[in-house]
Every structure is written in structure tokens, then in C-alpha cells.
Length: 346
Image 1: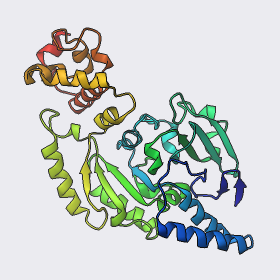
Image 2 (image 1 turned 135 degrees about the horizontal axis):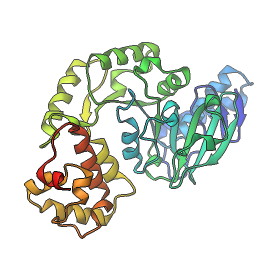
Image 3 (image 1 turned 90 degrees about the vertical axis):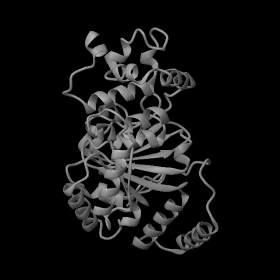
């Protein structure tokens, strides 16, 4: 174990920055355990037991739950994280960032702390607005020497919970020791799956075996992501999504508590810091449009931007973040279909 200004840094242990003042007030049980652990730490000599006591104290200093997000590559994990945090902090493309464990937690300022495999703790600036830099070369540590990242954000939501982003792989059982240790130390796991099936069951079973009992159905929530891709991509996807979520909740009994459907892109746009009151006004004007006209206009981003007869003032359609998310998800779900008349004209 090595020591740093923020506390002990142990292979596979969560980073241990100071708890933000905005964190929740601990209950009587937590206060009692912290007092007992603190008294024990003051009397114990250096060694494994003291290290475990420090881990307990570090955990009690955190403001809320640790929520891990896992799943396969391109399942929509980063999009869900951005929605939970309320700002775009996780890379949504298949970049080097998606190969690392990242802890998103509240802090007094936006910064990134790199924990290296040799125990070093390197602090660096976050990208504009907060989050992991787009280019990892700016972190000051080669990718192969990075153990995990600690991403601090001046974010009120993270005063209630810490988000743990795990690498996306074809099977969660293939995660490395650092990622498995992060999952084992999480209080709950959001398992993201766009297309539940036999592969998800096998991955979850392998994950439980490798986690040595630290992950159970009581702590795993399945997330049916990208429901906008269900069916033909037209009409209301929610009834179909709820049926699928219910069916797979039953088939994965014992592995997940339940499965809930989400539209990640819309959640990221609506819950993100880029959504404004002006967007709400634009959505209200769009809601008053006829269904036929709106269906054609939302076929794709290009069709929406070229919608000259629409209710939005000229040049403002592209400024609506939720509209952009809706057209992107709709177009993605129907890649091979012919465009409606309005889209073909533009």
C-alpha cells in the first residue's frame, strides 16, 4: 500500500479524495461505526488490519452509494452515465477512455486524478466543463500505466452517489482485476444491455462467479438501453420495451433484481446541462404540430434542419438538444429504410 495526500491508494481500491461538504449527513449507525473504526485505527500498528480499517473509514467518508455501470461494448453505458450525472463527462464513442475504470465523484473543482500502476497519483485538469479529457495523452501518464481514473466534478448530483464506469467488453467475465475490484466495492451495479439474451445470462453468471459472492441479484439492476431501436423505429416504443423488459426480468431471475427500459440519448439530452428553458419552449411548439408532419421531420437530423414549414424560427432547430437526440436515435433505428417525402426533398 502507498499513501497519498488523499489517503491510501491500494490496487483495486477506490480513490480516496476528501468527501465533499455537500454530501449527505451520515446516520447514527454510520457515525457509530466511524467512531469505533477511528478508535481502532489509532491503536493498531501498520499492517493488513489497519489497511482494512482505513478502507472502512474511507467508505464512510463518502457521501452516498457507489453505483457501478457495466455491460458490453457499445451497450450505452457512457450515455447512461452522462444522464445520471447531468452533464457529458464520459466518452460515448469507442475510445481509449472506455478501456479504463473511472470513478466520477463530487469535488470542489473539475479535475482528473490518474492513479498509476506503480502507485503514483498524478493530478491534471479536466476537459472544458468537466470530465475525462478527449485525448488521454494530456493526462501525463501512458495508457498502459494507468490503473484507474478519479474524475472530480463540481456537480450536485454526485453529492448523492459516486458513479463507477467500467470497461466495456464482449463479456464482463473478461474484466481485469482492477475493474473486478471496482465492481466488488460498489453498492449496486447497473447492467446495461440493448439486446438481452443468452449471452447476457452467461456474462452475468460468469461475473458472479468471478466476483466471489460480492454481486447478487439484490444489488444488480438491468437496464434495457436503446429502446428507440426496437421494431421499425416508428410509433411509441414503450409498450414493446416494457414487455421485453418484463420477459427478460423473469428469464434472468436470480441474476438481476429487475430490468427497466430507457432511451439513453433522450435521457442524456433532457437531463444534461445543455438542456435549457428555450428547449422546453421549442418542444412545446413541436408538440402542437400534426403527427404526420412531425414524423417526416424527425426522420433524420438533415430532414429536421431543412423543415422550413415547421413551427420553430428559422435557424433555431439545430439548437434544440432534445430534438437532435430524438432525430439521431430515430435515424439510427431505421438505417436501411426509405426516407419520407419531406426527407427525400431535402
